[in-house]
Image (cartoon, rainbow, N blue to C red; front, side):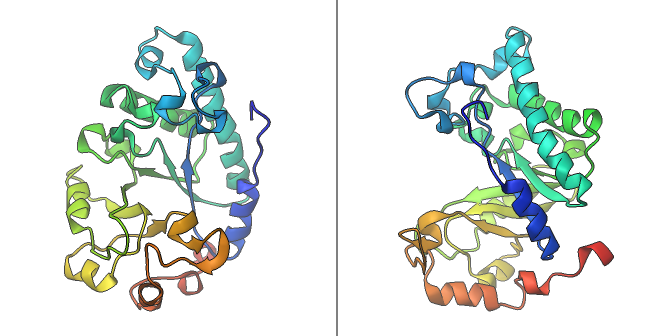
Length: 257
């Protein structure tokens, strides 16, 4: 917004909800403009190499202005989610993802600061803004970064195993189950290639949903043509035609369930 950007995601979500779909949002949180460097374009400000932000200093009170700027950003997102709440649109919300990897600024100061930030976002959204249409999807990728059961509804894993690798990824599924002693559903919140449903159920890794990334993972040269670079056409058909894979036309009427 500070650089003149705008979007239509809220409108698209309302339209997709009217079609009976379930919306999931990932927040690539661009660092506040004062922390952006000249090393990368401003719109890559969620990557650590594009910022000089120090989350630890913000969360421990050394950088009070930074704390207020983070609240400003959370409030801007909350305003959009409030529009969805007014329209009776629930969302699967996945902020602060892939934190343990260290490539995003929200994970570069370690798990303690990250967990404090997660709780801040959660409380600001739910207690201050009174938003109740959010299902919280945590995607920290490491149990040491888990903020606690009271702040998480669903656990997600992001997996990019390579090209045309159709394994179930049961190892990561089992790892995610162990992040907490409480029962939590496990989703494949980002994937490069699809996985074989036969292998997933054989290996007891029934991912709640999968979310294939865009670009070459789906289409060829940004055209409406299927790219087989990561998933071959035969596997795409197998996955979407499998009776255990629920597609949009098979979802129930959530509003009158």
